[in-house]
Length: 324
Ligand code: A3P
Image (tube, rainbow, N blue to C red):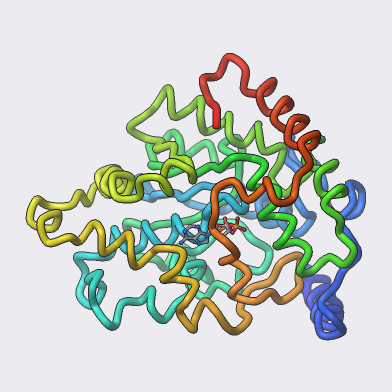
């Protein structure tokens, strides 16, 4: 109930003000298994609401990610690409919305317990078409109608060891005494928000093989290695391809630069302030921009840990054609 949420918020806010900490997440304490997917109870409630009430439109585009796989980046890129022909949203414009808005707030999440903190999401029905909506839900939980209507989905995944390291840093901001060993053990068992991660990856991967024109499957590492060609691909998929003239004028590179880790991280709107919550606890805007590096797992994992997680992922992906 709303009352329950308010008291949770109140407790969480008080906890945050007293040093920003909840106890470390445990299997029993933090997640529930909802149709094969580990969710926080409030998120499960929110997902159930989406499943019951959300009305997809055929021209909706979903940005789907597993948490910490580059959601913030994908939101920024998709926003810049799709809005670049609109008045006041030209990429090189000094008044561009990305210069004064956190990317998380420019594309609303479909499901999230703290929805009211994303002003745009207050009423998804009120958004003009074509809507750009973000979700962390696995494909199996995205409403069946989304597939039936032919809605397009951009999925972005990331090498699982880096995902875990990124998640651990993020979660450690609100969970005290959350050791990497604890996070690692849970993750290897598939217990993490929206996990298991391999099921999440494979769901979208398999569907993208069947319906490549409906599901664009991207990898964080590939995007980092060659952002320009991926931004072009993204624009084509979103049906707003760059014209020859735009390409000549360097607009693709402008989008890449505007949405780059260094650029976004440096903006005051992203480097200061608090506007989101994580497990109910207020979290710094800057927490969405940590190092933005590929392979940062190497500074946190022992060789043994790396081999263990690699072996699990390899086994899960066997025969699928998906690899990192
Ligand atoms: P690290 O913690 O490894 O630095 P999400 O947006 O899904 O929460 O993912 C967060 C991860 O994406 C963080 O990874 C963050 O630093 C990285 N990130 C944020 N903005 C980015 C950008 N513009 N380009 C590349 N990586 C970015």
